[in-house]
Every structure is written in structure tokens, then in C-alpha cells.
Length: 508
Ligand SMILES: *[C@@H]1O[C@H](CO)[C@@H](O)[C@H](O)[C@H]1NC(C)=O
Ligand SMILES: *[C@@H]1O[C@H](CO)[C@@H](O)[C@H](O)[C@H]1NC(C)=O
Image (tube, rainbow, N blue to C red):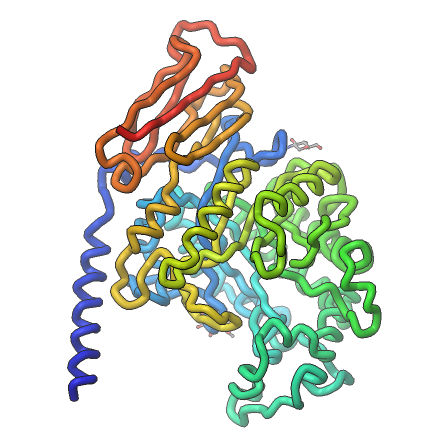
């Protein structure tokens, strides 16, 4: 009885708090939002918008791993929704990107039959994000390939492990299958850490068959990307196509050298990315393609070209993840490895996952270390993840920004994430940092007609106001518009191309 009452109390509180969250968003901020500028490519290692400005992104993943493979969209929920209120919450901490799961199992549940309803719903999320200045990176998400292997991502028809040892041998005893779903039962899936299931012989064979285009699987995967591109290519707030999350390198039992980036990139990954790029580019030759290496490419990815070759350097981005347990090195050192890679092959790079869970506040110093390093190397970042949604293949509770019981924004997380940053820079960024002081140094390009935009969050960082210093004097001026500081050349003043502008913002 007491327990029941407690449950009701929690429910009641969560209803009240949820209502509170919905009431927060600042209408003034929204009303003054600039229309989303289309991202057209990569120049000098950075994203460029249609006005020629460099662009920087901060945000979180939104990946719903179980059927129907998208979050609840019609109303706010502390754990499962990505509704309009959620977009307001992200915008309120100056986040301007999400990495949105678009799972192959959702796009093509039956071979050759795309689920138009699914694509329409995903499109409605992307379009709504646009009204909040939030860009979307579409992510073909997977972990351990499929629910046939206790993971998610691929439709069941695309998993070919015939002839292999029973799943998950040799990692565990052969699975017991649930008579209703035909899938491995809970005990099988929970016996070992999900990531170890990648070492099942069956999983390795299924991945190698994807790369080998067995029964046209690679072609089908590429064709679904062309289908996705046909739906999203004209969205103003499309950041790009993240071709496949955390690819497994192939059948490492057949060829153990495939564990080495030098071997798996040449043998499997690079030809795979090229094949998808070819199909996707028939539909959208301008969009940005995000490709990746294996998660343990600690000393570099060993690609020798971006998908499709050097002609696509200005439309390609290397996506990487930072998890301390896997990467071992501190983020500062790890990011350098990726920058060396893109220096060699071209394109840009983007941090598409890092641990952003709250963990009773214990993760906050680690999060700060990563996003500070990201500033230092001018890397855009997307944390894992906004909410737990459908917590498959996950050990920790994944919630961070939003308390999963009350639905309230956690102020300490909001403060960490809402660090002052330049979202758009009218020139070439030399340096951006934020500790006590925010500092942006850039070489201005006076031919760019749109302002530099610096996002600030007064509530968390400037409760008593702020002071802006600009050097040299008399070249550019600023005005505040909602959460944005807009910096433009002063009319009539002569500014040399490449003149160095320094802007600092200090809290009062
Ligand atoms: C990218 O390069 C191609 C030629 O290699 C060019 O046609 C295209 O306009 C460039 N795109 C951008 C955004 O600069
Ligand atoms: C297609 O997507 C809709 C919306 O999620 C879902 O209700 C329906 O079951 C899906 N169709 C198939 C065949 O999975």
C-alpha cells in the first residue's frame, strides 16, 4: 500500500514537473532564431554553410533501438520521447544538432519494400527540428547487427549466418530461442556483456557476407541509403548521412588480421563505403557522407581515400567515437590521431559519440574534458545520448540532460553542455576556447554577408551579465539576439581579407 502511494506520488510529481519543463522554453529566444542555413560542404577541414561561414555543432544522439525505431513524438516523456518539448530543451542549452537513428530494420522491414510510413515519421522529426535551429545527422545505427544477435539495426532478412556455429558460440552456450518471437531469450542476451557478442562466429560470418555482397546484401544496404537520401536531400537542416554505426571488420575467425585497421579498411570497409557512396550520390551528389573505421583504430584509420575518392573530399567527414575504456588515451591525444588521418585523406572529422550519461554527476568531469578537447581541436561533437529511449545494448543508465523520473533538465548537466561557443564564423577559425573566459580568434572574410554567431546561455554562465571585448577596435560590432551574439563588420569600414579578429566574453 505504502509502495503504491509512493508510486502515485512519483507519478503525480512527474506530471507536474513535466508540465513545468514544457512551460520553460523562452519564446523570445525562439522568435529570434535565424532561419537554418544549409550546410553545403567542407572547406579548410570545417563545415561551410551556404553563406560561406564555418559551422560548429554541439548536440546529442537520439537513437531508439527497438521497434518502431523512432522515439515517442506526440508528447513529452522523460525517457522515451523526442517531441517538440525535447527540441526546446536542446535549444535552451544551445545545442544545434542531433544524430538521429534511422535503422535499416525500420526503413526496409521486408526486403525490397521500404516503409514509407517510417520514413515519413523520421522526416517529420527532421522538419520540426528545423524550427528550433537543430541540424540532423541521419545515422544508420546498429549494434551487433540485429535482434537475432541480441542487438539491433539490420532487418532479420539481411542477417545470413547459415552454416555458422550456433549463436553465440564460442562466447557462450548455444542460445535458447523464445518460442513467440523466435529470437534469443533474455538469459542468452544477458549472460555476457553485449559487446562480447561480436565475437560469436555467427556474427562474424553475417558481417563478412554483408561486405562480400552475399545474396546482394551490400547492394540492398546501399539502395536503402539512396532511398533515404531521396527523402531527406532537400531538408535545409540535414547535416549528413552517417553510413553505418561502429562497423565490425568482417570475419576475424577466417582472417584474424582483419582486426588490424590496415587490413580491415583495405579489405572490407573502404570498398563498402565506396559502394554505398556510389548509390547514394546518384540521388544526392551534394550531401555530406560520414564514414568510420573500427572503434579501436587507436593509431589511425588507415583509409587512403574518402568514400568515392578525392573528388568527394569536400563532402566527406570521418566520424569517430571517444570512449575512454576503448580509446585508452586522453581525448586531447586521441583527437590528434584523427586529425592526422584527415590531414592525409582529406575531408573533415566529427565526434559522433562519447559517454554523456549523468551517472549521479560522476561523469561530468569526463564530459568536460572531452568537450574542452573538442574546442581545442575545433571538433564538433554529439554525445551519447539524449535519453535512454529503448536501452538495448547498454550497461549504464544512459540518461544525462533530462532526469528520467521527473523529466526536469538537470542544471549541472545543462551548465556543462551550454558552454559558450561560436556556431557560425565569418572567416577561418584560428582558436576557440571557453574556461572562465570565452575567446574566439578568426581570420575574417569580409565578403561573407552573414554575421558570426556566438551562442551564450546567460542563465548558467552569465547570471550577472557579461562584458564583450573585441580587438582590433573599430572593425566589427555586435548585437544580442536571444541566445545569440551576432558579430558583423561595421558599415563603411575597410577590412582586409584575413585580418585577425579576437572576441572575448567575460562574466560580470
Ligand atoms: C566540391 O568539389 C567539386 C569538384 O571537385 C565542385 O564541383 C563542388 O562545387 C565543390 N563543392 C563545394 C561545396 O565546394
Ligand atoms: C512501418 O512503420 C510503421 C510506423 O512505425 C509501423 O507501424 C509498421 O508496422 C511498419 N511496417 C512494417 C512492415 O514493419
